[in-house]
Image (cartoon, rainbow, N blue to C red; front, side, top):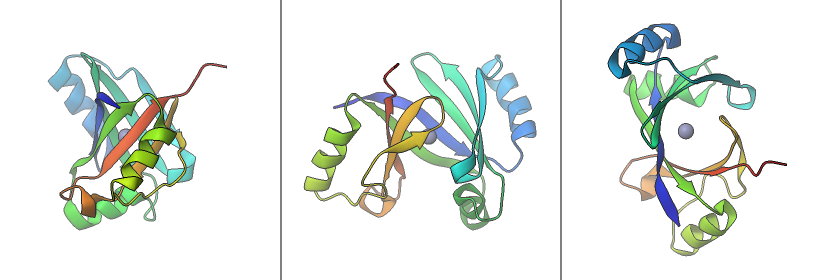
Length: 136
Ligand code: ZN
């Protein structure tokens, strides 16, 4: 089940500048900064009520975020939904005809298992599913 919008991902060119901007906008500091090496991306997280804002800056030309900005400019990159069981949800969506970018969930930022759906099936909006990693 899609529980709620967990976060909205925003592609930014310059994380430090965007932190200044979002600090002023939300009147708070980010609660986390994390580099995801496998994606070559810097992430910055803000809590906003039950939801989060994730700023994403590509750390190399090959990063999907850098490519997104080169093509479309800065702006909303994806919407992430929290799910209880990401494997079950991916199975359900695949059976419903959605194209999955990740058939198998992978490690994402902020202690999450994540997977993306192809935006061509979702009105051009990149959709992320994320599940809180169980505490071991
Ligand atoms: Zn995300």
